[in-house]
Length: 137
Image 1 (cartoon, helix red, strand yellow):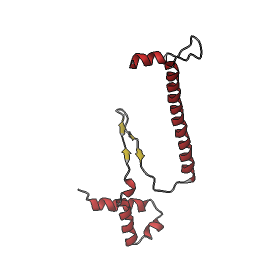
Image 2 (cartoon, one colour):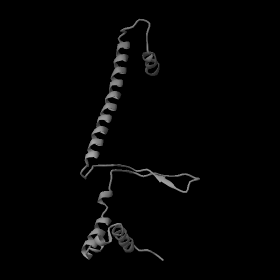
Image 3 (cartoon, one colour):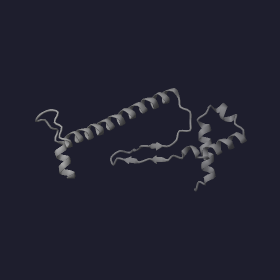
Image 4 (cartoon, one colour):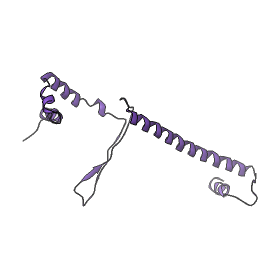
């Protein structure tokens, strides 16, 4: 028995209606059901610039697990919790980037200090200048 695409589309609508209160599901007109079918089949919400979905199947377990990493422009309204989470993630990202930049700046300043021969603490060295000279000079 083969299942054609039309039956699959109707199956999605039937599945959706099956999860509703029977009284509500029966209240849908033919036109409304067709609109639901069209909305389900329109996959505009499923297009992402980054869409990475690897599956992990473990040999001795009957299940497989999947991970989803999606990226793109968010076109929907965020709930309060999502806005708070987005703000916290922005601050964490900003902090991490600032720490990386600060580290790079400090290393460059240390190398510049060593190149100029400035010795702030007598007989103390991190050894970065020696490693830098070995690598590039």
